[in-house]
Length: 297
Image 1 (cartoon, helix red, strand yellow):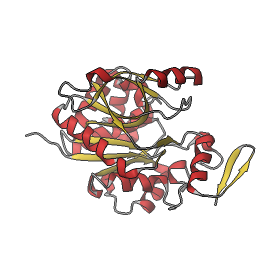
Image 2 (spheres, one colour):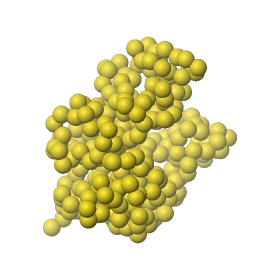
Image 3 (cartoon, one colour):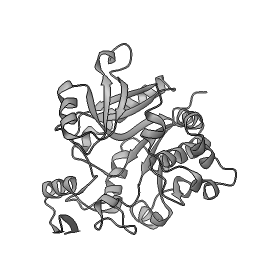
């Protein structure tokens, strides 16, 4: 029997080193409030995914030090849905841990993986591309979908996805075949990317069957697979996982990857330049010292 149950997996992330001292080990950037509604970035992400997933189907991956912060914003979370990392190990181990958990809870289920360190202005435009990606995975269970957005300016701070627009039809429901993932380029190269029309910003959001991702992890990064499937549990095995992103560990090596192009305005909160733009736009006051935001009012 085919299982098309959908789980939303929210990645809380680490300390946000590029936003220190505003972001700290005790209060990382996911729990900062940067918008005029004063919701934290984590809470805003939760509210977005609630458009397609019930609370009982939302899984959160966070460092064990941030468990209270997660529960403060999400008191409804089921205990088994809060996955606490004993050590920070980047996105590949975090997503693999979620995949192993979801596959055990509901074999064959679909995961929509979403980071919290993003600012999405037009939230009403967020749901449609996610649902398109989910429907594509229902028809193509061996595929992976990444969410991309059209670049609005040449940024050296974001990763890019090279796509093949010629293959958008052919029974793929408008999905674009991914040619390759590109790490943050310099500004000159970013300008060439935009001019070509073949590149999208990589939002770091993915949709796939949990079992499909686990199979790729087992094949392409066996150390991570062993760490998240350790017979004694995550506490025993997780620290042995390499500190590596999902792009490096899996996406740059996998073949059956497609992209859904989203139209919402998107910003990755990777540094103070992005943060200042968002705070200004949202009408939030802030204090600076040494070129860094040290307080948000």
